[in-house]
Image 1 (cartoon, rainbow, N blue to C red):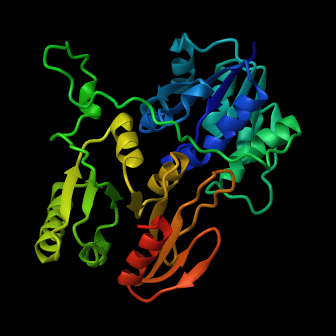
Image 2: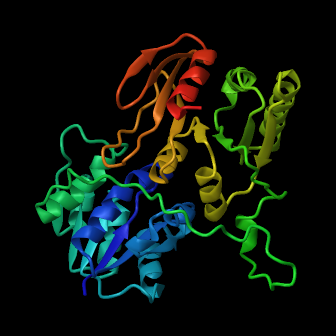
Length: 347
């Protein structure tokens, strides 16, 4: 049985874009042991990978991100040893060195300056490919195996059992519940919600206009920002609820672990966000997503996801265009965006 180790990308956007790589890797190495090391701010994202892929993930503390620290980490990670294949998806000098410290027989990675010193299989970057393309990561496997995965389309639409969001008080606590349990209970009623994830504070007036276009709609907001930013958002919600003809309802969730976030996405009508990683994650989980992007923002390209987010392009905080896989439509106001969302979701 082959033992494979992957050093995951350093950013969460890139890690999600690498999901097709893991699906293709399991297809190619059906019986292999697959281990994944990610930086210690990313391990929760690994839990969204389809469990059938059987990828074991490990957290790498960034405080050890030196050659000596990497050596010390590798020496003490006793569950990972006798590695046959090492794939470096981070493309850095230090991440490639990790293959040496785990004594991997083959070390595969994209050439990026001095990292070539540690690689046994040095793969040139394909012209035009960027790290914000899912094709970038799959290119590594295609070059190594000599095979193409053009027909690969990934989507994890299996809904797992609901997590225990509020364990019975008589059940002993494991001490791990805090990361995935919200401050207040969530009651999913018959009326589905829109899941909103907002990161860009300067667009709050736009979001107020967006909410005001709905009547009697339920919104669940994921917000992990500062207290001041949260209060600004709360003021907008209160104003929108007061002004709404049918009283929109809002619930803010400030602490979400992967189990809860999966439920929030899968139970939603749709995911609406200004963060690409959230939109791409929703697409992976089989949910239609709409992502608001600024005019000069780099746009990730996803080729191997079965679904892709709808792009809502902004120019000076005004919507000017929506783009799907099938069409691009010019628009002039937020009301047209809401109409387009209703049309896409057939509601």
